[in-house]
Image 1 (cartoon, rainbow, N blue to C red):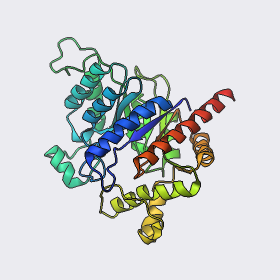
Image 2 (image 1 turned 90 degrees about the horizontal axis):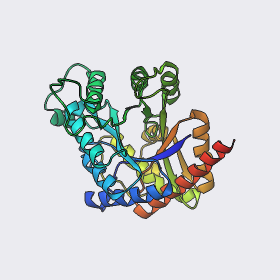
Image 3 (image 1 turned 45 degrees about the horizontal axis):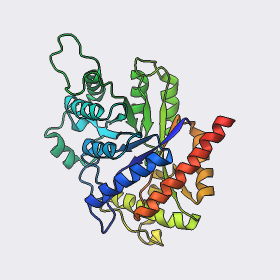
Length: 335
């Protein structure tokens, strides 16, 4: 592991507002910069009462303006929802305002339900144009071609780093074919993580953007002073995920003492599997669990995420994770 980063969905806790969530995001980003996180990514989700990062480029700009050194980006932008030129102009503008600090991760899913996807796109194209759209978008960041009829302004010549995101083999294959860095959404879909990383690494083709594979693995984290307290705090995210799975999304719930009383056993089993690439517990416990994830998957970068109802507890969790990951990185470098 070369470095570690943070994915924030700007969760809206029960009893709070979107304004509270966005204020919390800024405070967390500033703290993360001081704790040694390399990049801070936000994600596009729509029509979700518990997530405040729907207008992702705007939130990225807000975070970048509130920080000074940490890289800020999208993990990711759901490209099928947008015209590539519009995304290029948005991120070209961000890169112009914050040179050398902006990342663009691209996803193929809509990031929402189908009714909302229709509202976003106005029409649903029958063909999958994602690979072509990725190349078109990257082209707008290149130096202007002679006589180009369409240019992204700002955007031309910014060379914004583009990542392919995925939770299946498709993204791994595409990232390898194009020679782009790859980030796997193992924090909520770890089932094919081993196969996706193996595919990406084995079939990677060097490109003008990257000469060797570079993979981010995402993991959940919930750290507290004791294992029991961390397990309690994590019930908020597990309950939120269960409600999403059963078609009842809402604000991030308060933690509960007995999760089994809130979630049917079959659904709870699905949630536990989906969120299994994670570390939960005290400082000692999360160091061991994060170390096991790094040892197994050998990521170039580990990106942690986690939703905790209490903002101060969430800050403390990411602070503890940063210390554990700093120790693990130093231990690896000394080996």
